[in-house]
Amino acid sequence: MSKFLEEKKNDLITRAEEVLQKAKGEKRELTDAEAQELAEIRDDVRRIKETLKLDDDFRDMLGAEKKPDPEPKAETEVTVKEEEERACKKQEERETRAFEEYIRGYVLNKRDTDPVNLTIDDNGAVIPQTIADRIIRKVYDICPILDRSSKYNIKGTLTIPYYDESESAINVGYQQEFVKITSSVGEFNSNVTLTGYLAGALVKVSRSLINNSKFNIVDFIVDLMAEHIARFIEGELLNGTSDKVTGLSTLTNSVTAAATNAITADEIIKLHDSIKDRYQGNAIWIMSTQTRTALRLLKDQMGRYMLQDDISLPFGTSLLGKPVYVSDNMPEIAAGNAVIYYGDFKGLATKFSENINIQVLREKYADEHADGVIGWFEFDSKVEDNQKLAKLVMAAV
Image (cartoon, rainbow, N blue to C red):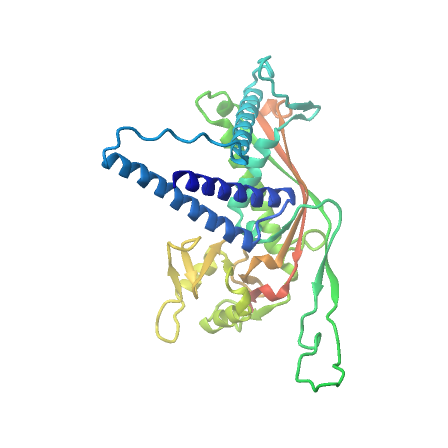
């Protein structure tokens, strides 16, 4: 039985690795079906491990003189995966150490047996990719709007087709036998084109912190750079810039408030119901702190507060059962402002033309007793599907 369960467990882990490698090779997120399959594999593997442990425990209870020798582990893709993970972890540790040494002013590559090369040019040192990847992951963690959007990592111009699925696009109805059916087809309209706009973020790090050997300077730089980049990207996704990244500013699905300085419960319900039920599953609210405070005072017809604290949801607050995310980049309640966004943010397309490139400038800010850390990235964002998103706009003056 133990051999059978071990083989089954290894087969499941191998299958999970195949699914993950396929998504990684295609540079995309997991599909819903793949995520569900991985979740099932995880649960099955956990149950098998528990069964194997119980089997060992009962052998001890029955007074077995000696547990059978474990069966030799077969050469499978699991061992290959473990080796790859160890190699990646070792590489990240080496690059992190080399980066820290460069920041602190130590001599690079002094270990002949364990060299790690940082690319040095006139502008300083280029941070190793493993460090840049940590910054990128942190950006996604800080910015849920970017994390929930439809992401494309493609160089050059990307045209996203939109399929006309209106009722007039395809004829469906009763039909008589031997009578030709009138056919029609929907059309793909290429109405969303993403290019790329170069942006940069610069932060300065105190040499006093750098010279403090007990201070984790690498994590500090990762967090600092990620915070600056995430805040800028979030602002562009929410508000846009007319001649560059437009983000949600061109969203046409909207509800207009009756007043310039107040929001009613009815308007919140209208905004919620402006999104079709099939897109409600992953919907969230986005608003400013001031707007959330105003909504805390709203009550429904039964006298119940509409906005509730709910620690089981991602952001700890719910409105009509959906999470509420607060952003400092959202406009406050004022005439003509779009003060609330709601819906599934897969309707917002974001494209990065190249990975974030981070450089350290050691000499440029020497007269300020500081080092500079600069990040370059190229991105674009537009509304991909107006059906998935809606906004509440305050009345004009």
